[in-house]
Length: 546
Image (cartoon, rainbow, N blue to C red; front, side, top):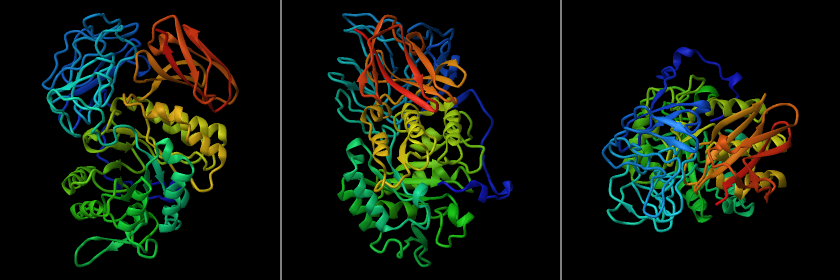
């Protein structure tokens, strides 16, 4: 949840963080098993001088080459290998990755394999990108979980958490929970504790529909802290605050579901919620010791999403709640905050395996509606891309679009969350938002970048000047990239993206400006956006010409 941190001072000794120092070796496995991922390379981009090995044995003498990642000698683990850009009858691949490895047990439904930049096959070849939850090229095949493209069969192997594949069967929809970053709304940023009530939640659900948010893909209506009011002394069950929610939680969930939406709640792995700890909210009780009962209550009410916020407590408590949710038998997205004041647990530095435990996890302290907070969270998320993929996402906190940022900064904020494959959870009053705020939050072309089924978290691939960054995100499709030309500085500047930076072949490529909603190409070898405003982003979709 978001608190005013300067007002929430407490002794560091009460925090039991359990986080370790930075490490270049991190777990990149799904609940169904997995190995260790080791990442190195320029700007964290495996296509630019680095080496990327995800799950299973690390390849030896693996090098990169222009247009793709080439590894040799890597042995696949049990569960089938993922081959990126391999050849097939009728065509050969360029910049292909062979002998790609998967971890023991397969990367499966909840796992992810981050595709290298570039390295795509010619027409008639096998899939250019094989990834859990991703989409294969036409006619391509892959093993383990997720959705296939037109004509792509899915065979064999057991996926990780998220289901199993059928031998010889085909798939048209993903069975992974949170297969793309969750999109929705949370009550805290605007309404905090005192403003949360049944009327507000219903009004936001109504606004999802009337504003076009639902049509744009938003679905979760999430209640933050202060919905509860203690526990029943006889049964131990959590009690809904009747003064705030006189109709009860089941009726409210039914109302939200009746709009074609989903509903979420908040709790903590502690005896008290964060507001109970810091602000004295007497009804704010956490779930520690009551995980089974609470998870069953959530399932009985029809809850679809749980934000589980560790203000204080043990990291090990997240596993207890995960298991309780599974036992309750209802698919519930688990969003965790694994620390409070810090240090934060992230995929590159934590004593627990976030990917196996949660669908999304906070990576840093709370956001605020100012540019400095947006920049802080972007920078914190840069090295964490290794943990992102279908079913599990880095969470740099909720969106502050419409809550105090100017419109230019709000558009940049939204663009960067989109290219980082971050959850798009808004925190504004949807019933009173301006036309510009609505335009930002419902831009379907930018949202499509965020929701691309490949599940690739964008990263910095070039820094052409002081406070100037080029970000790239692999999208489904041959040589298809989303690019953000990001001006963090205080004056306008021109920013150039080179095809070599984003790993597509030299020559002509189509270029589309996603905020202008118009084609600005084709361009050859590079594209320059002139006069990119301060605190602004030019968002592009670039596709190498056939």
